[in-house]
Length: 446
Image (cartoon, rainbow, N blue to C red; front, side, top):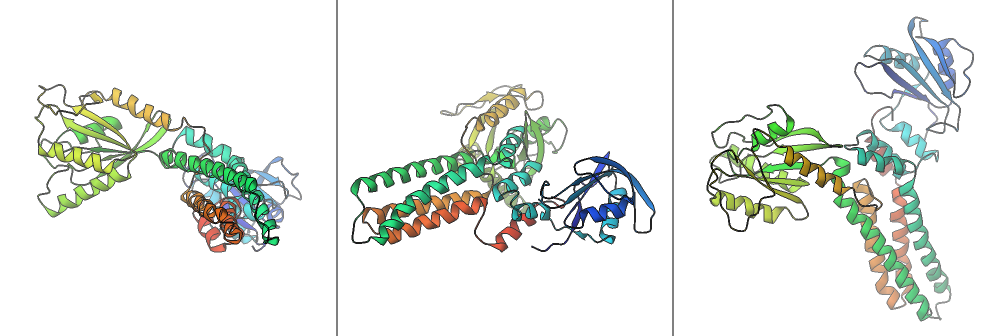
């Protein structure tokens, strides 16, 4: 990394009461002095100061806080300027910092410097990035713990256990004429099995709670004209989708966000599933099937005022084949009309009038999402972390075969690969391209 002093606006664009400009690097304090015409700033004290541009023109009256290295987020000298919010003031101050010698920061560069300076590891950096975009209060709590190092501690323990086992193997390789004692082999197998169970449990819990991090996705499916759009409008509490008695009115998926309990969820109103009558409708139905596959919860909606038919059978067949490991709610709609729907073997979770009240459905959705976070298992929060644990598990399982045959070189190779995979979650040995890609996904100023 170079020693440039970097600067960026750390708050979201738009009108607000305050905006924050962050400066980090060796020249941060020097730039702050030039901006304010002040001689010094005591570390960690909020100082009210006028801020001037390069032409000595007043920009704003702001609060300046100086964090002396290494006691800052980046472990470098950092200055934060809290100015009045809006489109112009923060940009003017940022422009002034650049004129006084700072460079505009790249996306995620503050966090990247914190990582390289040993202030945080990759698991903590990812937790910080995802905390900003948390879709539920439960997710925010998990990410706050990981930001403080809970995942790091778990990963380092697993890694240390593997290294401890590896040490026995490496020593034994030096004395190749002697086999490992049988009781030692059994102890190693037992320890590897414990590690495998722990990592498998973490992996399973992480995949099951993926919606907690990304935001739960709920798909409303059914044949045409069963009331899917009316249900979407009721859940949103406004008329987002066009409602019509004409079958096939919704010809594409409609996606909106709504908060239920402490969760921000994405609700998808899918096109009615049936034999398509034209190309546009066919594409809409294909997207509906994709929405089902990508959803965490599926609401299967049936029209209680009509007799069941082949299109209902098609819906049930699709649900059976595309909703493995998903929560499915079978809902009978239009209960205000004469009941004609009858299907042997289909039990409804609830019956509603989607144009009147969907409170029961909202309560059930909230319960499903709250239950998803009932586990105390450690949680992986990114696909990168999940892939590393999957690769670790694969290497542990591969190591068991050569261990049984006392092929210690192959056994050690797989354990070394497992150690590297676990280390990649917190602090990889090398891979600049991966680091650039990961930190590049952060927001500017972070």
